[in-house]
Image (cartoon, rainbow, N blue to C red; front, side):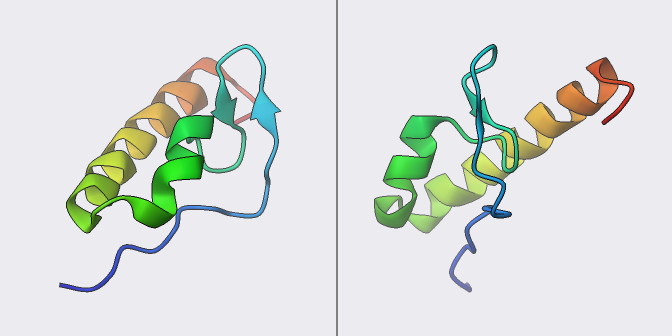
Length: 63
């Protein structure tokens, strides 16, 4: 299986209210640990990020 690419989109700004990056929706811990996470854990984080993004998009009419 291929290596899991970083979800970083170079919009590295943390949202104080949620504790998530406004670009990739990761927590600081997820960002810091990404380079040492096993691929299975990275894939699990990617699933969580998609869920966070859907929740954010649904709660913010401006996206």
